Image (tube, rainbow, N blue to C red; front, top):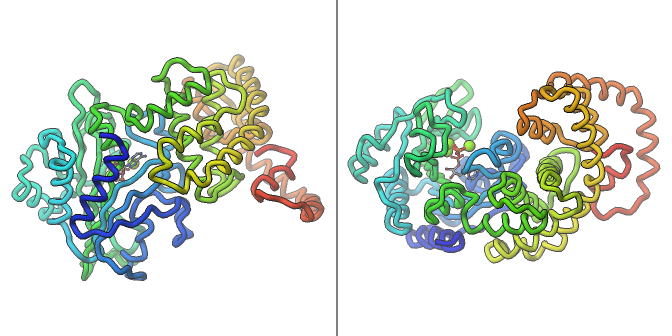
Length: 465
Ligand code: ATP
Ligand code: MG
Ligand code: MG
Ligand code: MG
């Protein structure tokens, strides 16, 4: 089943259960200055859950574009290392605003997975919050999931991606237990069931999270029952597609295979399983959609998340031997894959390519020179990268810190983070001392006409940051 069909079937199913189909909101949340980027389907409904906003419907369903590459949820470091994490992904979701609760939410999820998508029930394992007997009973007695495949999860802080099954929007406010559905990809893949010591592996892959908002937590930590409990669910379409297309890794699904081939075409790489191609295919999605939603590369905030993603992709291109701009050419391929579902991408694709190309040109030369400096340093000390060199790469050659750290990780090199911080601190002090001079420089530039405001501030800097 192709991704397009999976999307369609999800929305149609929930529509048939009385849900209103709501379009994806942009990646930059309009209603929440505390949240950097949209990281789940509930973001556009946050105020509805909080009772601050109302909608003409009490059931909704959406396919939400999400980015987890900064802030509270950051999966950037996982891309290329796990089979299931992306920076950009699409979250299928259904929501109840004080309408149905656990019983229907669980029954819908099960019906959709096993009847509509036809997943074999015996491949599914579910988790519930340790104290949530209600959810446990529904799975065991109403749905009929055998008890050995219902796992109670408490605070399992040991594993890297540990499930904890208690969800909260913030320190105070709506919160509640969740129940998650995992798919077992088979004994030949390393990993154990949720809650086990091998949970970090990729054998049991979490596909769906059903959150039951039933409490309100006050400042003192007291929890009271909400008068109208709500449901918020999220399922990554790429993970579901991997299951339905009988592959293990998300990178093997239809949507990614074409992008990976396109990345190979543009970089000259021949090994289609290479990690670098996967990273590039992941990053073109995140970068393009961030630009569609109005973000442009810059040295802070949203723009810096975007810049870090682009530069990581370019570094992987460089590693594959492509020193010329190539990344922007993938926009056309991405549009072929996703333009039908996201007309806003098709509409913006020329601008997206232009923004990417400008960033590629800007970083291209310093990337090449920076890599030479890095190689020279590593030739001297193959096991450690000192903070001063890493800072020079950052400050003079525009290598974001995480990009340098990523290269080090790849090569088993220890990166002196503390040394980097110290060099950064020192530079800030020097900059403060020179503050007056900088102010004067800024005034001179204010007369310039600009199109993309973000670039302009860069041209003013003597250094590429
Ligand atoms: P994991 O434990 O695998 O990191 P999660 O518990 O952080 O996932 P949730 O916050 O529960 O994920 O999000 C709901 C669903 O969204 C997940 O069950 C999964 O299908 C999908 N999802 C979450 N993060 C990613 C990601 N980085 N890339 C692709 N899909 C994701
Ligand atoms: Mg996660
Ligand atoms: Mg999880
Ligand atoms: Mg989860």
